[in-house]
Amino acid sequence: MLRPLAVALAILLPSLPALAADYSDPTWPCVQRKVENLSPGLMWAFPLDPTTVTPDKARDADVAELAGYLGLRRVTLEELEPRVAAFAQAYNGDTETLGLVFHDVFDNLSKRRSRIISGIEDFSLSQIALAEKIDGNRLAMDAEMAKDAPNFDVIDALEETIDWDQIIYTDRQRNITYLCETPTLLERRLFGIAQMLQRVAVVD
Image (cartoon, rainbow, N blue to C red; front, side, top):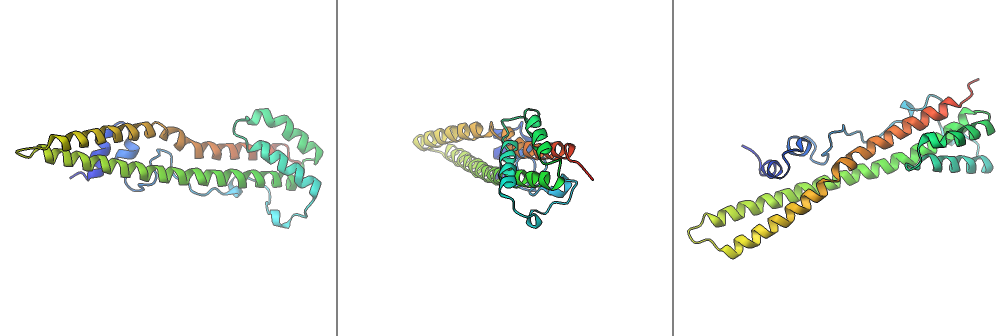
C-alpha cells in the first residue's frame, strides 16, 4: 500500500524518481550522491597544516587575494591561470605558500557547499510538507464529494487551495536540478584549483 506522501508525489511529479521513489533520506532529493564533508587531503598532495606556518603579513595578503579570485565561480580557472602562474613565480613555486592558497579556497568553498547542502535539505522537507498538504486536501475533497449532500463551497475552496499549492510546488521544483548540481560543481572546482596550484609547485 502506498503511503500518502508517495501518492502525492506520484500524482504531482511522476517524472522525478529521485523524489517519488527514494525515502531512505527524505532530506536529499538529488540524484547526485550526498557527500556532506570534503577532505582536503584527497585533493592536495603536499603537507597542509596552516597552524604551523609562521605568519607573514605581505605573503598572507597575497594568499588571501589569490584565494579570493579562485573562489569566484563566475571566473573560470582558465582565466585565472596567468594570475596563478605569476603568484607561483613570485614565491618560487613554494608548496607551503601554494598550500596556504588552497587551504583558504578550500575553507571558503567547503563552507559555502555545506550551506547549500543544508538549504537543499530544508527545501526537500518543505516540498514534502507541501506534498502532504496537497494529498490531505485531495482526500478531504474526495470525502466531501462522496457525501450524499456535498458542500460545494467547501469543495471549491479545497480545489482552489490544491491548485495554488500545486503551482507553488511545481514552480519550486524547477530549481531542484540547479540546486543539486551546485555542491558537485563546487567540489569539481576545488579539485581543479588543487591541480592548477600543484602544477606550478616546485618540488625539491
